[in-house]
Length: 301
View 1: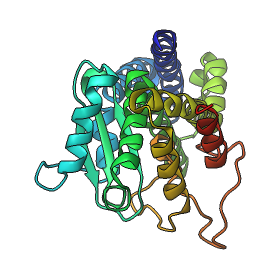
View 2: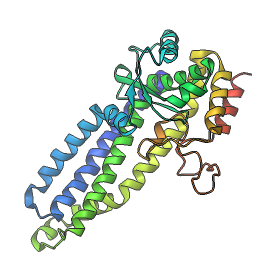
View 3: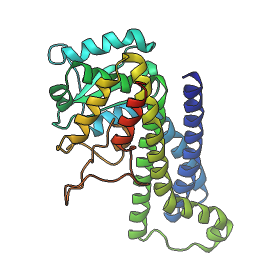
View 4: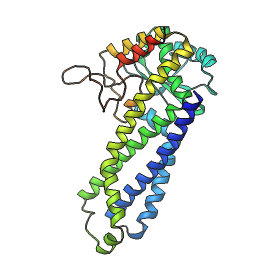
């Protein structure tokens, strides 16, 4: 557990560093395209460092806003509060995560925040309505596992930063449309190499970022499942919960591609055109539920 947390912290720092580099090059390319002259690199550095800081410290608020989440209340969500209080004893978290609820009929949940001291667990109303006590306990334990392993920092920062890179790519497209790419011979010759690198990053970074986001999510779900069983000593609860979540026909209305990897199960479970379940591939945000259930059943023996 300690090694996993340490590795996640290192990966988070590495990703933030890569993000600053990519954003600097993209921002420089955009500034140069808009013919801002020698101030382009200064503006790009300030912009990249500022956006990285905001993404790190406000990532939880951004994610909750994107998913239209509201704070949970003891009056309406007492069962959820009781389960969290009970699991705090076995999970060993330094602070109790804040609880949020998304008003949606699909049963699902995610955890977010930059560290265990500033963590959030968010569930849908469908999850509270359709799962029994032990199934809900398994789901909450799974999300607490992500918090303890520092998965939340990694997935949240990556989600926000990937979304930000995509937004910058859109901004560059608009800059082209506005005609800001008219050539300036002196600047082009002096900064040709950096401009080419910036253009390459601008085109490829959304693709690489999305692939990284998906890979990080898939490989951590198995660990969170097994850690959740350590907390509850009840694999059957999580197995039953995953089966219900997988078979539920509802679509998550507030789901978006930037945060889909954070949920316990893919919120886009079915193809909207033909109603068939999607097979696991390079673009899948989660390992197959069948594989996760099989791994949990193996823990019982």
